[in-house]
Image (cartoon, rainbow, N blue to C red):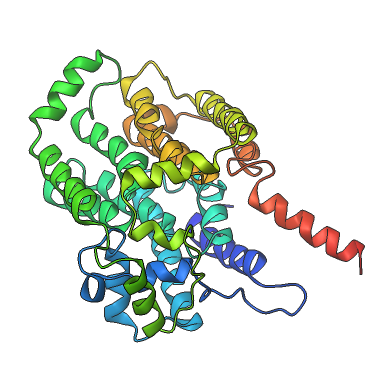
Length: 364
């Protein structure tokens, strides 16, 4: 019996949305309108000017009047559904929408597990932009640049998480091995490189909210958003420079956390090698190298590792489709049910939820 993987994906996402976000004690859905996360949807170009991470908030601004629980849920649900549809179209484009490799991508905690357990973030939007840029990488340079641009304007971390991978595929679609120097020369010859570089520079130079922290709080308050006025709080992300952000990250670093992240990342890379990724290929090791600044800019290491997994996995899928068509090993699918091997930390979000449920029933 053939399984409709698209239908399974929708069903899985619905189950995980409930599992991760509905409280077992009072059966209430988690509050999406609390501070920090909801501020991202309040930030927009209309009221705040050209400020980093303002694109999705501008989209929200034209769709909804207020930052409310219902509106935020609808908005997030739209992106979850969009991710499933775009993922299906991505794998259908390369003739793998009925292949278990597609299902392997969906059930990874780097994707649906991550997006449903950490609902308010922009990660799902960044992955959608990445997949769309890959889908149009050879057909339309304009659409490739458009989706890449949306990714950068949604969250500046896109510059390190997905833009290098999509650009390497654009430049080096046919090459599976080779010297990195000709690859760099090809990049420097591409008009898309200079267009996207200009967008990045715009965000870096003009993306800071110039009216100051107090005015930022006032605007949030006028929209009914209460935030913690901690002078070292996360809300300062819009009024700090990149150097200030790096200094803040350095203060939060711990040796144990860093060592643990290195171990998890190593496990992920071994897993990808098990799938068939050849890291002698510059497409793959350059993705890894360009991703490393994320670990300096922020301490959300589980998310960075998830991004690296997605970037390398989808690059591998689109560059080496023929290899995957004949791929028959089932063990990676079984391993991915737990991770792969706990990509968002150990254990994976799913296992963390299972442990919480068991613990609650034990103390009833």
